[in-house]
Each structure stands twice: as structure tokens, then as C-alpha cells.
Image (tube, rainbow, N blue to C red):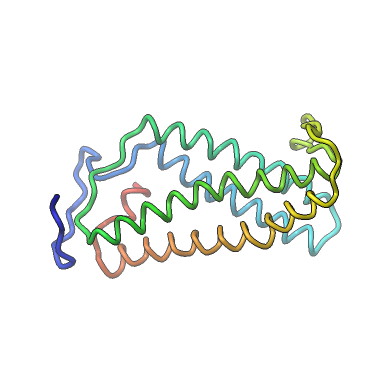
Amino acid sequence: MALYSYRESPQALTPHNTYRWSLSARIFHWISVLLLLLTWLMIVLDENFNGDFISIHKALGLSMMCWTMARLINRGFSHAPKPLPMPRWHTLLAHFTHAMLYVLLLAMPLAGWFATMYRGYDVSFFGLFDIPTLVSTNRDLARTLLGWHKDILWPALLAFTGLHILGALYHQWIRKDNLVKRMIK
């Protein structure tokens, strides 16, 4: 197993996409970013304005859950780009961060959805149809799940998203190894 020096020269992108993520992976990534921002925005709007923003928040959350499942399936069929030379601990931290982001992008909407169901409410999917309650009402469990959703999973999602962004910026501006271009172009 080769260990790479921190000082090795960055590798340039090749015209054959050898060092890029597939188009489908890039689309999944950036739509995930958009869904996450919109879902968060609905909470901000709900807290500051009159309207049914919480219903849109829930529909977007379920969309994020389904999108993440589709993204994981896509990830199973598409190949990752060739790894860039970097210290092993960078690679391990990146893999751990990505795994946690996937877990949180599934756990967050699941906790919110089950909290809603345990409160006894259906979830409207953008007014197109309702997802019925599949469980018996249990207000205590609903409060617990909502607490996890807001107080544990949301801060964890913010922390790992921040770590992901910091890692990308580190590679772009300090290592200058074109890592960010693999997800953009």
C-alpha cells in the first residue's frame, strides 16, 4: 500500500474524466445541496412568517430521504474517480464524513416523519397526496423523535456539512489539487 507525501504535486484533471465524478453523481450531489437548503429555508420562513411552510418542509424532507436513497443506489453503480495523493488520515476523515452525511440525510427526515406520525398526523406531499399515519399515536415518542430531529441530528448535519465544505476549501485553496473540480465540471 502506497503512502503519499503531503508535498506531492497535485494531479491535473484529464480530458477523459478519469479524475471526475460521473455526471449522475454530480447531479445527485448538487440537487442534495439544493434540497437541504430549501428544507432549511422552509423552517426559517415558518418561524418568521404566516403560512404553511412546515408542510413544505416535511415534503422536502421526505424528498431528501428518497433522493438520498436514490443517490446511494447510484453510488453503487457509478465509479468513484481515482484517488488523489493525500495522507491516509485525510482519506479516512473524508470517507467518515461522507458516510455520516449519508446517515444523517436519511436519519433526519426519518426522525421528523416518524415524529409527525406518532403525533397522529399524515404528511402532505406538496398537496399532491397524503402519506397516511402508519403507527399508533404516542405523543411522548413523538416529542423524543422531534428532539432528536432538532437537537441532535440537525446540529450533527450542520457539523458534518461544515467539515465537508472545509475539506473541499482546504483542497481547493491550500492543497491546490483540483479536488473541487471533480464535483463541478
